[in-house]
Image (cartoon, rainbow, N blue to C red; front, side, top):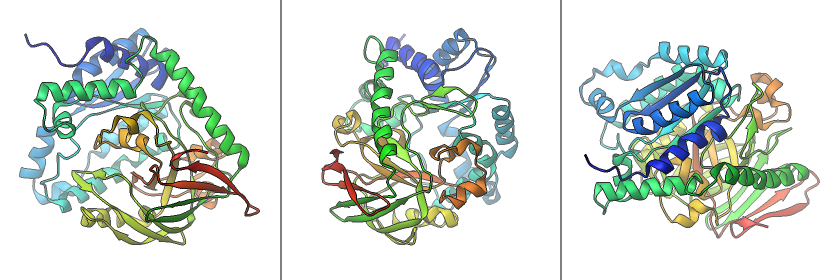
Length: 412
């Protein structure tokens, strides 16, 4: 029997961290888990630790790359305007009953790169519409949720194309374990210290109550107004159900909600954006009155424009996040082609849906109240990187005074 290139001890630690830090799963709580079928070894360890923590029922929902491709290559055209709404309604019902949510990321990010982009866009839109009842429970932070990753061989070969598959998988696994802080003796203590560090950052930002952030650097002169009554967050946060969780593992960011109507200027991406099988490179956009009015990319521009045309909110910002250039993921020098990792290598912004919890008292606000404070609404939420060691960021207060926030990509 072949020996797996993935360290089983570290894989078990990742599963334990996902349950005890990522979700802080409570006794009696159900868990809805989505994962690529290749991640079955991690799913099994997660189920082990979930039941040890007292889980009610752990229900995995699997996807498979070959089945996904079979649809694109054989299904009739009308298939791409449909999505399993019944499945997402069931997930929304589970979340309404306080089930926790976990997603294991690991599919080949370029899986659909050779498929018809119109079919990809239609399928994504149909899925986004059907998934909205469940997604709103997550973006509204009704429940404790978490994302972790597994080194699927097809993803590993994309990241390390010159290595044999077993070597690529081992290297990607080691990178995931390091970024997730499970390659050390006591990862739970390490996460406690890291969460405290992130809390220091967002506490400082909240204390200043900036009305806007101003970014300057090569190809960038951008002012992002912040939503009225916004609050910064990062690391561990308390969901509406009273459970403190770490939604993203790994995470190096502190983030908040920008004002959807108050973004002006131009900005250039500093890392490629991998989106639905297309690598979009050298994005350059101009904002006016909060909306993108010009958009270019040296590669993948047609896909970028399809994204921007998803709905009215797709051209506006739903998140702004600060990450130091010296973050461990940035220092790794690896392009993961996976937003969960790549967004933690650089400061970034997100097109589309905002997070309701990034408002003071956000858990009690209605959708209309969030919109009135500047929160954006959209079917999409797509992060892309605009930070580097050449970007400066100032915080602008309501009286117009400025405070250095970042200099050359590091906390000032």
